[in-house]
Length: 254
Figure 1 (cartoon, rainbow, N blue to C red):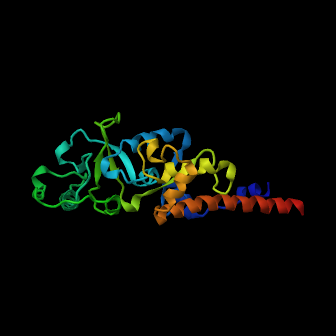
Figure 2 (figure 1 turned 60 degrees about the vertical axis):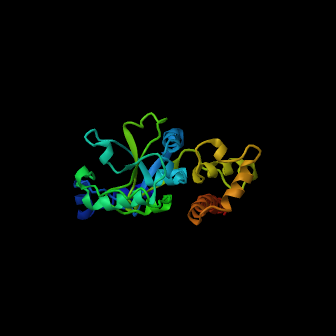
């Protein structure tokens, strides 16, 4: 009650009033956040499972963070877009897409007459890693076709977001399981594998006779430091809530 009474008598500065009138918002963040509702998580799973073969090494957490689905413009010719086919992206393809950025028009499309010649067929191509694709900062963003089994494969494509426009997924719904409780250990391992291990089918998450715990332990041995850091922060959030609850419990006992 005291807080509400103080807020009701709070004066607004001229800067605050001007910001509201001009619809500039009342807060600013260093990152953009994207809500992920567990009940509608199937939409992301469907797009993720139908991603291009060039993105097979990307986990679904990075997929939600760094890739967005866009509708293909009807005026765009399929041969003159920056979309890679379902096969692996080679160094010559990737280098060509980088060179095309200097010819990009204002709507991120380019004319077929401006396209540089492709590398010769005898060029030794090597597969470009997902990390290299995600690090590109060109204005013309790399895009990939959805597999044919996706219902929107003819109308939409996957576009890699600019590194400065990456989103941070915010899971909404029931809290994520904790790693320090034995009764939910298997569920925790299963959720972490789904979020951070690249997969297409359930068989990619664990072998037939392997438990979720064993599969998770094998995964973290070769998992990158960035994913380990995110999983650690998820557990820290639970620990912070425990400290908050303990603090208020001690105050009530005084």
